[in-house]
Length: 230
Image (cartoon, rainbow, N blue to C red):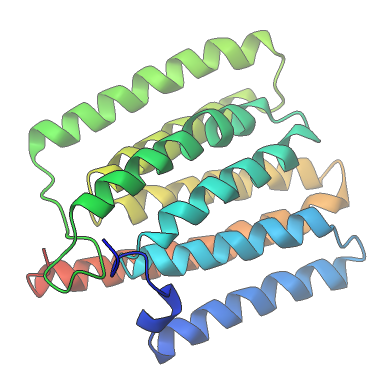
């Protein structure tokens, strides 16, 4: 367990550093050039870009930072009344990341420093999808009652995010694909918000950066799986 929670930056390779620093540069520049630099947004996206790199490497610090990101992003979403995002990240993603942290710590790979890849059986996949549908349906009812803007997109965000959380808990490489789908949904969601307030343009850019990072995560995990790192 000590190896799992050791310095997470020690496991990063040159390409990891390049992607991480490049991601930070893009989001910082997008905030500065927009003329609407928002400290909360900058902090949130820096945490998000960092956790995605750690998740891509199978490092448990990615899960720990997911808890922090969920709380920060939830606060950010409150300002635009995106209650679906608040419900998803504060009420679901952050708590599930805590659970996933425990699961990851209990299943290190042979090196002892990263998580072992789990086997996604048809039964587990079916359960993941069905539970995501149930969560999204319940969220739709709540969000509709709360008069949440862009209700359909917000509900789809709940579905993709919940599925990603479950797959992350199951230690499946396909968690990154689910998060990439969630990124696309959130790009649309914050595009709609930015049409009303330019302050949210950088948020849309942030999730475009996250999309690239999640595709990288999928590539890394698939590579580890092909090498028998389990």
